[in-house]
Image (cartoon, rainbow, N blue to C red; front, side, top):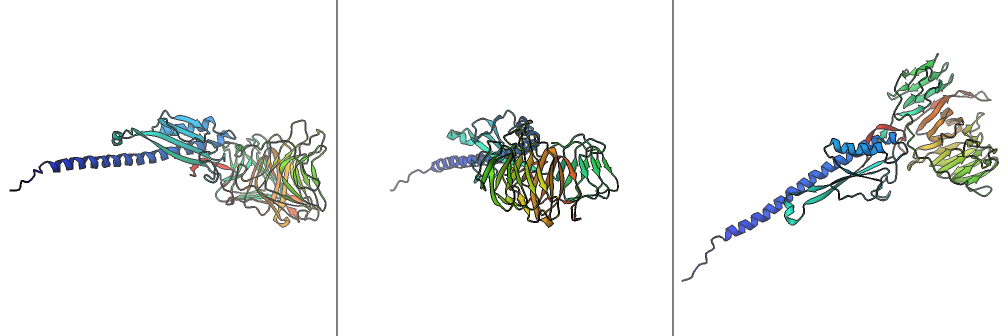
Length: 473
């Protein structure tokens, strides 16, 4: 007779072992689901903190990672129920073992290169990394008590809707439109003077602002027989910040550059005066420090290679300073150019940024200068440092083949302006602005200023930022 083994109880053992495995997988699934939830939570925190920090970009000006920015970013965590965070700024080590940590980088650094991050080292952007050690439940049986969860976000200010700013806080005629002159602008106009005649408009002049934007004045307007559409909005509060380009970091002014006679120049060591280019010559200029500045006269053909051109005082206090002056009959071209005009000090001479088309046809050869489309000076064509208060002049028209595309930044200087060139965008940010009407020697008249706001060529949109932050990564 064959004896059968007693198999009773084996199924229970197998079931018990199976239940352990099933419960382990279920526990792992629960923990993974919780970690995914916490990853989304950390991403929301990083986005909120980045936006809050970006809103402070205007307040911080050129100060990176300023206190207001730090408080705003940590405050966003607190508002979402996460307190006691450890803060680190401007580091490329973007992880932490702290229970709750936040990294703020302005400009972004974490990804290490522009190839990985198009906004790398660009101080228009805020980078925030939020990390936390998240406790897990079931996987503790494997000795894992917490898992680090990290989220990263970048934010910037949204584009502003204004493109003309007169910054003078008190004087009359801060923004002056001459008799018979006109402005046609697709973006807003802001006059910041509190004067009763802060915005003045002459006889038969015309100011038209389109796309539902405003002609806004802190003080009041003064006009007679001037057509304005819409009518000026007066009594507004001073914008915050008052100067929308104050966040820019000025270029470092090094030693005077040099160049052989006839070029190509990489700057100029002007003593008695700056670099004078006139007559039937063809010259190439490169970025550099031009002591005494540059004047380009009738007949000259000048190519400016991409980069920053720094105009400063001549090395002799009695020297003639040209600033950056372009006279009639010249041809000047350059793409990706910023012209920064400053001075060596109060006791030195300083020149303006000046386009002197004093007779019709003077610019027939053409002037075509456009600002950089990326980088720290993106969109900035002319910048006259606040240390240089010399009045400047920009005159041009499409019939003279004029293209001067970019922002004109004159924080402490008056600019006389009449331009209806072929630009994609134009931004005027100056202490005082005078829209003038010119009559030339042959009877030709110029006084119509046409602005544009097509920022499609710029990697980051308008350099005039709005007041709201937006997540960009």
